[in-house]
Amino acid sequence: MLSFIGRNIIQKIVTLFFVSVISFLIIHLAPGKPTQVDPMNPRFTPELVEKFKKEFHLDKPLYKQYLIFYKDLLTGETVSWKDNQPVLEKIWERFLNSLPLFIVGTLLTWTLSFPVGIHSAIYRGGIYDRSATFFSYLLISIPGFFFAYILIAFVVTRLHVPVIGMETFGLGNRFWLNMVMDRLWHLLLPSILGATGGIAILSRYVRGQMLEVEGEDYVRTARAKGLPPEQVHYKHALRNALLPFVTMFGLILPGLIGGSVIIESIFSWPGMGRMAYEAILARDYPVILTVNFLSAALVLAGTFVSDILYLIVDPRIRL
Image 1 (cartoon, rainbow, N blue to C red):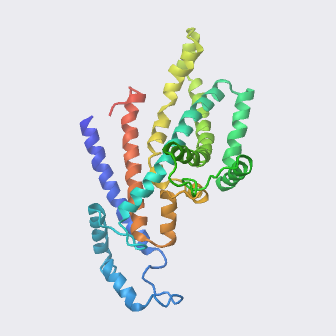
Image 2 (image 1 turned 90 degrees about the vertical axis):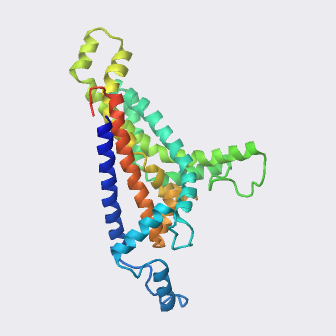
Image 3 (image 1 turned 60 degrees about the vertical axis):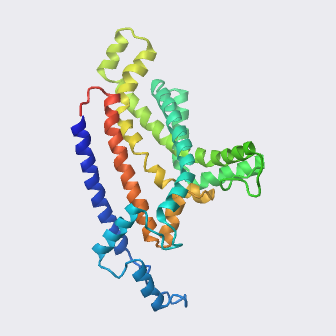
């Protein structure tokens, strides 16, 4: 067990190093440079460009830029080219904004997908299964931005309540309970919107995996022995159908960084996804590289957690 964890950590560190190198090269090989003289902006003079290069070490060889950047990143000294603010502080602030969306959306997705998928598999071909299949494909087919505008129009016109932003504009210093309820209300709609696509897709996976396991010999043997249907479905079939979802559960961690650009943009939610999108438009390389590095670290951490969870789901697996 300990030797597996040690080897796995070393492999993840090596992988993260190569990811950092490749992402750094791709960013700097992309067309367009932040140090180009803009003829449309008279303030962006060649002298200012040279000052910018020296301040951010862009006049040094590429390998030295790489070393300086990640040294500053690990020591917390990396600053944004856009506003000269510390990158880690900006990411942490946006991370705290995206975290509630991620938690609520993930809880809704995973708590609703399994009952829907399991029930569809148990009553395959019935009215419930056909209805769940229809609505799943409908939610998968509708573009997220279109569905978001439909929900916003419905809520605003019918309920006459604001839904844009993290809180109601002009609310002021009201009673703390009103502030909490207002924040929860603004959190509800984007969380539901972010979970709808996940519920539709994940419930299909659960249904397919359950149908595959339900046809195995050991499940038929359990039925032949006269075990209660609940025990057959939930103890024998479901537990053996969970293994692929352990990997999927570990890979939800990058959602902490990426979030949903579309949802955060439509609802004016100042989260991680929106910040990354704005950094790409502004060619803010420190923010882009830091977000990419943290995303890769979370992917590797998620796969590591999945490897450990395999033992809990299936005791036959030995590390």
